[in-house]
Amino acid sequence: QSQELSQAQIDYHAALQALVEDGTRMVCTGRMHTDRICRFESLCYSTEAEEFIYFHSNSSVMLPNLGSRRFQPALLDLSSVEDHNTQYFNFVELPAAALKFMPKPVFVPDVALIANRFNPDNLMHVFHDDLLPIYYTMQQFSDLDLEARLFFMEGWSEGVHFDLYKLLSNKQPLLREQLKTLGRLLCFTKSYVGLSKITTWYQYGFVQPQGPKANILVSGNEIRQFTKFMMYKLNISLEESSSEEYIVVFSRTINRLILNEAELILALAQEFQMKTITVSLEEHSFSDIVRLISNASMLVSMHGAQLVMSLFLPRGATVVELFPYAINPEHYTPYKTLATLPGMDLQYIAWQNTDREDTVTYPDRPWDQGGIAHLDKAEQERIIKSTEVPRHLCCRNPEWLFRAYQDTKVNIPSLIHVIRQTVKSKPGPKKQKWPGSLYPGKVRDAKCQASVQGTSEAKLAVSWQIPWNLKYLKVREVKYEVWIQEQGENTYMPYILSHQNHTFSENIKPFTIYLVWIRCIFNKNLLGPFADVLLCST
Ligand code: UDP
Image 1 (cartoon, rainbow, N blue to C red):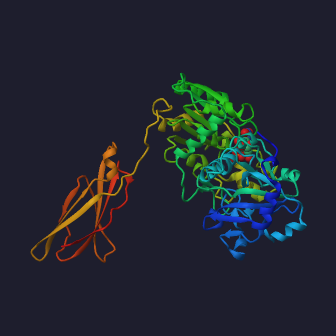
Image 2 (cartoon, helix red, strand yellow):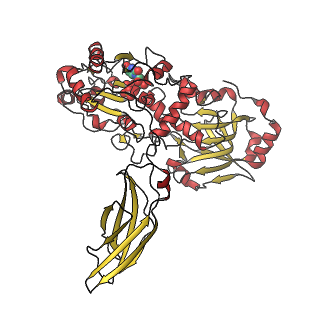
Image 3 (cartoon, rainbow, N blue to C red):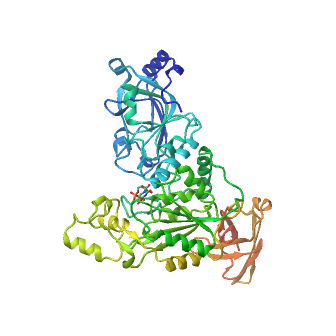
């Protein structure tokens, strides 16, 4: 990977002249700072002021042109974490004429993606907040290809997982600190600023207790396209029909330990008649862990960031997440949400230690490792007596940290019982089924015919044709939903039908206008769109 910015690709005088004459050009997508990504030509950055600079000139463009709303609270989020006040992006404005009095600009020839990593030392954050969003931001803009260069502006050093970030492009990513060594005034020829949030599934609890995002827009398919890319870059080939089935226990070695790990491994091996192996971030290379997980039948681990690796599990595999005492699994669901995304095709099982005897606490550790010695005595006692951590906000709740960093002796019969409620026979990967789930189109050529019998009775015969895409599909069950609504009323009569025509006589009045809504349903839960409403007069 090339470290240096190659100035050779650039005609310096032409570039400088273009900057002075044309200024900065910005066009963004998104209506709010939380969904905005901006494309710039000639965005500059002062490494001394640590500010981005927008130069006004004859041809400069700024869309959206927000005026001072640009500061309310910012132009955009620089990380994929929504509306976090440490992650805002903005620029300061100058007339291009000011360049005469400024340091000589150094031009960045590569197409740049400028963003913040949110927490590069935590593997869950690395994948969820950074790698997936960067990957799919690059998919969104065609000039962000493998020759693009990533610029991380959050100010952290490389961090333990930097090798993963390097897989996303052929050029070495640059950190904020390193920009100083390049020059005093950097000008990005072409750059994109901000990250797509379209793949994120979890909110960490900054404004309301943590939980799945309200509107998840990613499915297992996109997650698996990303993992396929990562595995290709890591030189890991998926072993087809690999011989032996096995279980992986992903252990932590510093804190939140499984105290009877040997016993657990033995029990799993015996119960499922499968080889059972342990891995940890401390003892295995990242590639080895991916290689092992990508062929595993089951992944068992304490709650924690390492569980994000279930994104590499094969379809059909089982994820077993172990929760320490007093931690309600329903309140901490980043890995459950991942495993149960539509199309991830993983089985998810949570087990919680409910026995106080089986937990080991560390009240005397520093606060950030769950210690509570710094709290007043009454509060310490309340925490120790409590049987469940109440829902809380991120990130420094001492009761949560105290419980999260307990070690656990896993009650083996209880765990096996919980797994057996879901995994009846052997766990294991299954052959990929394609396509996952396709939705019906609109029904076609809907018609209605009314007939009146006397002054109080009427009938409505409705018929329609199958959705256009059905003739190319094998669908287990095709049904139709029909709503009959009297014009001007808020309520309607719903029907589920198996055929393409039906005569309605119940509650149909003569000399009345009915609105008829029809949609097709595949396999009970794949609801298609309603066709244009039919107006039927009896
Ligand atoms: N970690 C680890 N082994 C340990 C403790 C932590 O590999 O014994 C890793 C963990 O997977 C995560 C990072 O260190 O990537 C930070 O762990 P922390 O406990 O702070 O976060 P959590 O796992 O609770 O998200």
